[in-house]
Length: 428
Image 1 (cartoon, rainbow, N blue to C red):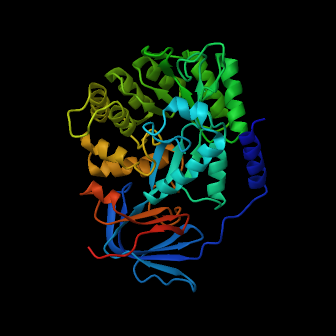
Image 2 (tube, rainbow, N blue to C red):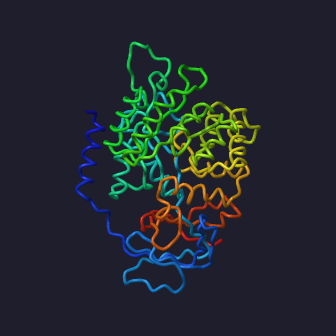
Image 3 (cartoon, helix red, strand yellow):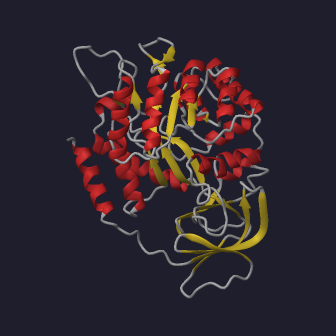
């Protein structure tokens, strides 16, 4: 058992004993325009009362309990905390250190310390929930981070952990090493239906909320991506996860990889850069959600020398055209940025790029609130401003329905009913 496995086992054992987060006094947020993108509703100058981490009441002249904390948000827009469905807290930007170097040369303690800072930066940017899609060689460290956040040991968004991505033999590893060595590969290798079922069982046992599988990838440096698992293998993986009530996300960039993943029953497709209309139509027909990770596609081009403000490189053009076609074909699109490839805390860049593809601002906001919450199966609790919902809220300066840049002007972040970030009050 590795050091990080021991840490996670200990953490999981302590969590099972029932640690309780620090007490949260009642909180009254006053004077903000309240925006609920999922309902397309907005109301001016209302108050929101939060008790025990839940929204108790929304309205005017609310009578607050004794000891309530008051926060004046007059002139601000109050909306649900944002959700990013594709993040890697255990990675940091590839222009700081290449993926291979992070997996091979950075120890897990250092990577976990970076992840603590990344979680705080993400929360302060207004993202109160993350689906973390793979630790990339850091074993089950995301489970420890998730549980430490839930126990109020560290600050960060609520985390849905996918632990170790599942890959086929020879389809995911640091490149260019002497084949006599067996280095860390950044994921869990499994082959055949029985092997995939076993991997799913192991990951769920160690705390996975989601399973992530690579439905396609390149098999050698410079080779094009091709499907890595058969349809029967993917069906076995999804069936095993479904038996445990755990959904599956699939990395898939090619039409064949997407088709197999969709037919196997995954809930989301990540990237889909090379998707053709047939693959996108199949996604729509099966209710599979697209997380386009445009921010990562843009970041890769920046790392390769492209300068923003100059014409988009071909691969970035391809990714953006795919999103335009997906919208026209009626595919459900959710916010998934692939943060970690680029800087944590800049997750909103994904929303800006979606808007740049012609997605209406209202749909952009839903993609990072109500749509993302539905993907997580938490639509009654997250991604909304309503009585009984979790008090995960974001206050911004401006109205993001008409000016998406308002999401860059974060004034206050509330998670689980506690103020996690508040900018000094200033006049507009």
